[in-house]
Length: 569
Image (tube, rainbow, N blue to C red; front, side):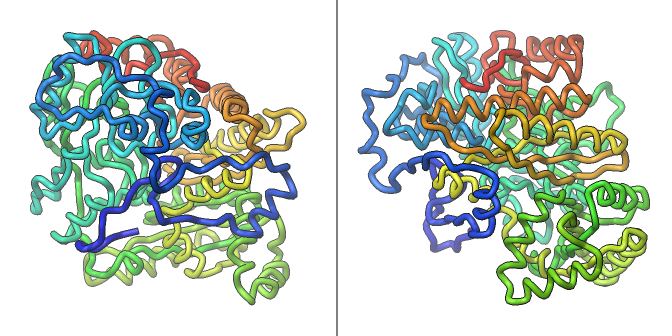
C-alpha cells in the first residue's frame, strides 16, 4: 500500500474502501459460514474505473447553486469532485455511490463546491464570508466518516465542502520535548513517514490509518489499535489551531494547565461543529531502528469462552501488564477467523485436533496481545518480560498459546479488513459495524443486549453478529460489533434494513447506559441518542459553545447537536 518517490500517487476509489488496484476477495470458508446463515441478495453494481466522469449524466444531478465571493481559496464545481465529497465511508454511503449511474438521486445532496484553502488565512476568510452569507461549510479530512459526518446537510442552503489536503505536512519538531506540529490534512502514512525520517513516531493506528487525517482523528476523537500502550488521540494532542466563523482559536502547546477547563479536550471530538482544526501539535516518542514488523510483536491465545476471556482481559489490566494492544474475539468472530486462517494451512486439521485435546473446542475465543519494542538496549527484554507476565496472569484460564504466526498475519492485514465489505457487496451481502464502551461490570449485559437486538432486528431473517473487545481501560473496555444481512432489491430498501439494525442497536446501547460511540464519533446518525448519554443540560451546554463560536450554524450543523434521526437521509 506504500509507494516510492517514483510511483504515481494511489487513486482513491469512489464506490468502495481504499485505493484502486487493491481488492480483497471474500475467503471461501468465510462465504460458506455466511451462506449457512444468510440468503444472499442481489449483487451491488460497481462504478467503472475508467471513464466515470464521461459516464455521469450531469443533468441528473443537482446543478451547483450560486455562491458569493468566499475569499481566495480555490473552489471546484466539477461534478465528479462534488460527488467524491458527497458521502463518507459507511455502508449506506457505498450503496448509494454504487448506484450513482443508474439512480443519481439516491446519492442525496451534493456540495455546491469543493474549497481547497492553502493556509489558515484562506480558511479564516472563507468562514467569515460563509457566516456573512449563510453558506454552510463541511470540513473534509480523509472522508472516512462512518457516522454521516461527511455529507452535506439537506436543505436549500448552499453548502461548500472544505477539503484540507493542502494544509498538510510536518511543520515543526521539538525533539527535546517530544512535540511535533502538523497540518491537520496530513494523512496517517505521511505523518508517520515524516516522523520516522527524524527518528520519532506518533503510534496512532486506527483501522482507517491509510485513508484518514490527523485533523479527522482529532475531530472524531479517534482511538488507535495500540491505544492501550499509547492512549487515544485526545491523550496525544498538546496544542491546536482552530479557525471558527468568529475568528481564530489558538490553544497553545502546554504539558498541562489549571487555567480553567481544558479547551483542547472540548475541541477533540467536536466533529467540525465548533471550528475547523487546521494545525495540531502532538506528543511523539523516539522509535527503534527496527522495521515496524519487528517493532510490534503480537501473539495469539485461545481461551475457552467469552466470559472467561473478558475476565482474563480485566485481570491483565488490573495487574498493569504493559501491553500495547489487547483484542478479544467472541466465539462467532473466532470461528470465522480460525476457519480462514487455519484452513489455509495443511496443518489445519491437525491443529484443530490438537486444540480439542487441550479442551478448547468450538466455543474458543481468540485473544491477541501486542507489545511494541522500546528504543533502548533493553527493548527485547521488555517484550519478553511483558509476555511472560501475561502468561502468568492467564495461566489459571488454561490458555492455548498459538504463538506469533497469527499475530504477524493480523498486523500485515489490519488496514485491509474493510476491503472485505466491498467484496461482500459484490455477492449480495452487507456488513456494518457499531461500537460502544462500558465498565467491566456492565460489559456482559451490553454484549448480550446489543447482540440480541441486532439478531432480532429483521424479524424472521437471521442476522449473524460478531463481537470483539478492544481498547481496554482500568475500568472498562470497548465492544465492537460486526453484523451481516442480505442486500435488498433496491438501494433504498437496503438502507432501510441498515437503519433498522442501527436503531435497534443504538436503543439497546442507550438502555443499558453504554457509550453512544467509543471512537467513530456521533456524526449525524447518532445524534438522536446522544442526549440519552449526556442529558438535556449536557446538550444545551454543548449548544452554548457552538453558539459562541458559530452563532449562524455555518459549520456542520447536522452533526453532534441536531437530534433529528437522519439514518435514511
